[in-house]
Image (cartoon, rainbow, N blue to C red; front, side, top):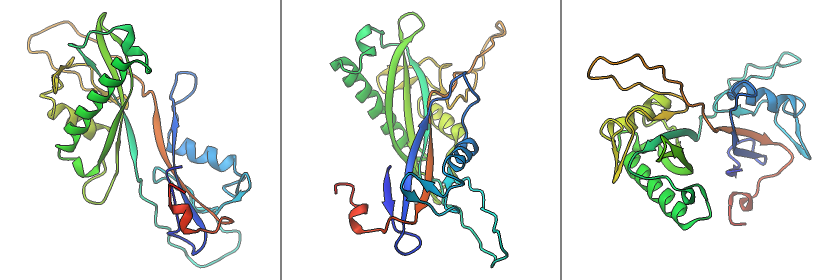
Length: 248
């Protein structure tokens, strides 16, 4: 749960949560429609979640919403969708001048902590100085792994807040912003990059060859994680200012 608020229905409570899924080959990729309908089916059509009763017409997942049909004729109600507050993108790339050693795979090691912090800071700096900086929130390096015998593959989760100030950020925009601000995916601060290694939520553009070469088939990396904004209203939880205080 990221926060609670009382923006709706006087004394009820609106919940904003970020729910993360790992897309694997074991089942079809999870998308916002699947998340929405799974929530609906497992909460008795968006009516009850444990001890909480819900507003059946309040659920939004990444802005996706299905209006609950009225059982009796009633006044026409215009539903204004709740905008996506945050969206997280899987960003993977390979650093060619960072030799991989086992310590880089251990989240408890000092080397892992210092390197992931440094890479995240460079990603933050890069996006903060880009055209989409108003929407950028932060990047977090989730893991480092071995690539190409001795190089290091980075898996990061970069989060953006979609606002009305600019067009909604999507995976293509994130990819091209990264490319444009790293000299065509070649350098990130002191790190040199494999120019053909960038994927954003599985999206990839093959670097054109300057001379004729063999045809190369590129298999895109599947998204490792995807985060969905889930918002709904609890009708039996009266809102108090204490609920808005994350330190309470």
